[in-house]
Length: 321
Image 1 (cartoon, rainbow, N blue to C red):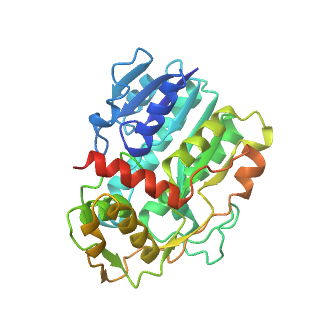
Image 2: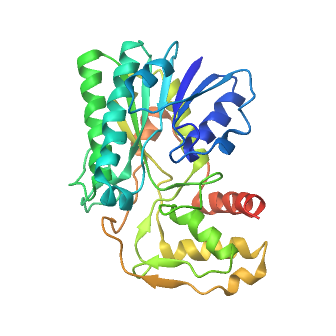
């Protein structure tokens, strides 16, 4: 079985590369290293079943090269981050919409069996209802959210028009090993971990009551594997929440991080937490219903946020030092 993982040097992509090489798949990784890192591929780079293509999804010829002889595509390549999309909507659109369309077209032309792609919980936009159910969405709140919604629309049209099988996985606040704590758009968990380890005060946007369905990386890997292996005709050409199905406030999150980090370094328990203004484009609460994934794919997430934080903190403590 040969799979292409776009954005394979990134956080989620590199974890998928590690997992599927271990499972004895042939893995092709396409990455332009705009946000990914070569060191994320240390475990697989010299493996005989692994191929690295340095290329850009904005170039159709790179996409065509990458899909040659591929059975399944796991499309992770994207420019993430709501704030980045607000600052630079054009580049976000070029990568997330034009790049996505290039990959989808190349996959169709290469007769790829199934195109599985990273969708986003940002698609729920201003929808107030909780938990979030796949077929009820609101208006997007950022350029990033628009691009991820457009991905879903393109995938649906390609399924109907050209017959290519697609599955979208709406990721909810994924965290875990290899998530980059550096840079202007670092995700909240690795950023807070790095700050706490340096005895710096993390800054919570708002009063700390905004909540998220934080999802450990191994649950995401599980969903990608189920999306590849499912034989259920009802399970394809649709989208799934990819989450744990529970929510945690930012205040609770920081306490979890401090408690777990303090096991390694007791001084971290004394670090003060600060509060700043709410961030533009942020939704107040996010909680996924995972019933559809359970029913159609047999998904049962293995890691709660507590278990995931324990694993992630241990990884960071041993790798950031």
